[in-house]
Length: 332
Ligand code: AHR
Image (tube, rainbow, N blue to C red):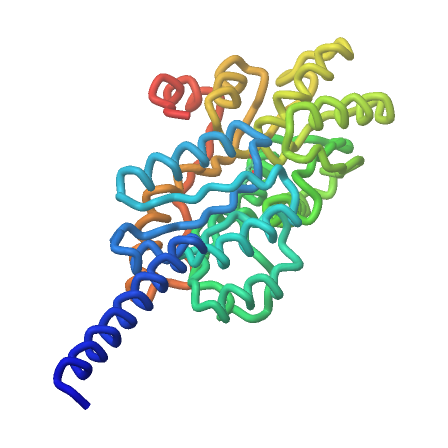
């Protein structure tokens, strides 16, 4: 073989290698690629949000978007509109796009094992935020970041037990539950029931889901008022349902906060205003400001660092007087 033809073969082989390399790079970007591999060092976080059902949720979404921008994390955000099937679809999309980390706030507790297994097989770490799943296999996710919902329900119930300790007859309670099957609805119900068991006069006479929305709270409270001539207390699993219920209570000719004692969870601005105005009586706080901690966790799990299995948010409770003090500085 001549020297010239050997040189031609070497050049052809080199050209082939270069072409194959550039085709592989194109393939990555066509499928969304991995930002880390595509020359972009930013962590890509796929986040599936429950929806926009409440003031709490809006504040939570803002916190996550702002924290991602501040941390230099590329956020792929999906709104599931309160539907589990939409969340499963979003998680599968994130897997296909090869994001670095997946985080989500599961609309309900059950039914996640298959899709979480798919994420694990794809070696994409998953972080649960705000709401938990009931999967027995804890290796399907790295950590949970959020509130102790049982404690929130218990604090609400303990306050009521103290307020009604002198009651000599039955105290009729109606309960507006959150989304059926969701962790906050299950856990707040449990914690509240456990606490009020301390006083046999305290009885839940009706309990139904208002889906964490104002419209749901109003509609279900209207039904409660029609069906129950004597309602002494409303326990609403969030501020928004409590705020919706205020309309139904006023329309029924009753004074909220006086004729009916109202206890809620969250402490968003509108809820705190209702508490300061004397329309609500007590709020157990649930903080939506999870964004900064979530970004820290995303960085750590991407780097392969160990993280605690559960990280709980610090929260408090508010009486009417405390709401008046806190309201001017309330950010959400
Ligand atoms: O999961 C947190 C709950 O979801 C909040 O209490 C409620 O307002 C929201 O919709």
